[in-house]
Length: 263
Image (cartoon, rainbow, N blue to C red; front, side, top):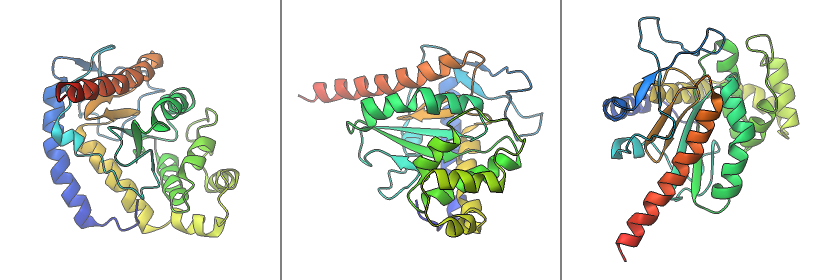
């Protein structure tokens, strides 16, 4: 990812996500239900009048669509992505460093995905910063972007998600973020601090947020697996984790069937 995000690119992305959001609503109309979490785990920055986020039913996947597939950036130099740019399956994840379910996914699911699919060239994971829990979430998102400027995003990601941290209680203060950067092996801490507070960092995070909001995402984690949406966290977090793994496998099987039909 480069640091050249600008208002023009935000407008261009907004037009694309408006189309995609219409497709997403249609795709989920028969398979989704409203997200109902208790107050401690609800994540939203939208006014109360906004509709709640939705999730796919366990074991079901909404159909992929070209407009959702097009959201995969596939930039070879994107430091907030892991896996080959030409991998057959791209999983986009909209997440918040303060989100407990995101942390569970990072600790329990992503290592298996990387080992079983990313390392074998079958899957690419693209991270989207989607801070919804307040100022510390936004600051952590900008810190993640800053880590990426020194090619240390995934090291920072691992440190930030290494344990469950109390939300909005100083865990992601500037001092603690600098400590995390050091633990992640970031050598130029002065540059990291400057990048974290830069306009480029704010614009990059805003770009990701606008993309997510354009899709109707209001809570985390949310995923697009080759255009198939898995939105929101559930009370039984295992269901979301399981759904991500299932969606990746389904996408690979679908691609295999397409290839076989061409023989």
